[in-house]
Image 1 (cartoon, rainbow, N blue to C red):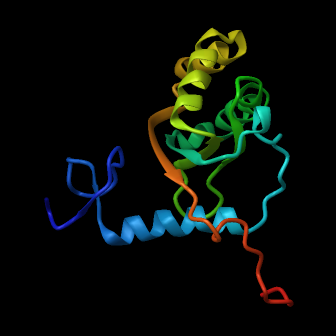
Image 2 (image 1 turned 90 degrees about the vertical axis):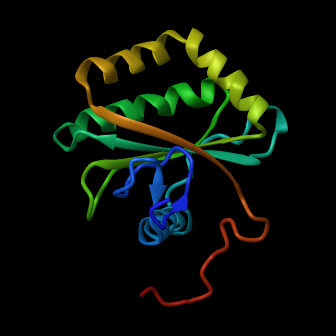
Length: 166
């Protein structure tokens, strides 16, 4: 096990069996927490049919850093498609500082069953198929990983109590 913590579907350490070391795991978790707590503009519609978001699909993309603008367009296209197909789009995130080839997409769902229904609708949606095809044709995504997480009650969107900005 190479002395690593096992995380399914994640690749990034020296082990080829899908393991992250503690430093990689903490860095990834800190990045996601920073995005969730920095207060990005919330433009997504609430979940359909009064459903609450119980799970979040976190998609980690390894992108071609020379095609950052093409990936940005790809992500912006999902801004129309995902809500129409039943996902609660939390946001897409491009690298800004540090690693230049990792991007993230976060999409909320009421359950894994609602995620499966969403995936079926995506497969039938012409704009979704076109967006997938564009990404494949341009080869802008080198690798894609999905993980499903649930929010811990009392920890999501808790505002800072510090009055002055740091």
